[in-house]
Every structure is written in structure tokens, then in C-alpha cells.
Image (cartoon, rainbow, N blue to C red; front, side, top):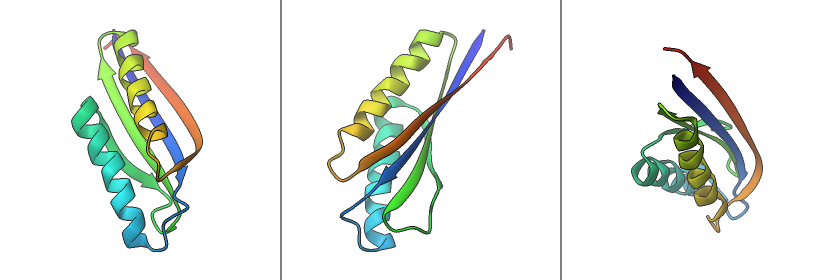
Length: 98
């Protein structure tokens, strides 16, 4: 069975005063998660707001527990970032027999 999960994280960046400052924080989170946890990651919403962003992370594996463990690590990574406030987190699962 194939297990796929997407993690949507809505964040606030209170110290950001421009899109350039926001992009530096977003880049750190997106690229950091990609390199540390081997997940797909991108800024997926609120691109034109300088203090808000929606980030998307996705993981795929043959074991449900592995996907869950990886994305829990990503979630902790985002929560640990001192530059951001987490507004909300949404987990979306897709389990398939493929």
C-alpha cells in the first residue's frame, strides 16, 4: 500500500517588513525541510502578503508510520523556528492500493 500525506502549515512572520524579508524566512523553512527530511516542500499560498505564508510539505512511503514520523519531524522543525508563529496545521492523507 502507498501512503501519501500532505502537511499544510499557515504561518505568520511578525518581524517581516517586506516580501524580501519574508522570502528569506520561507526559503529557510522550505529548503531546510527538503534537505533534512527528504520531503517535497513549497510555499503554496499567501505569496503576496509580507507577514503571512502557507507552506506545503508532502511525504510518500510504503508504511503509514514512516510518513507520519517524517512529517511530525517537519512540523517540529517549523514550530522551532523563532521567526514564525504557526497559525494552523492541516494533515491530509491519501492511502491507496497502488
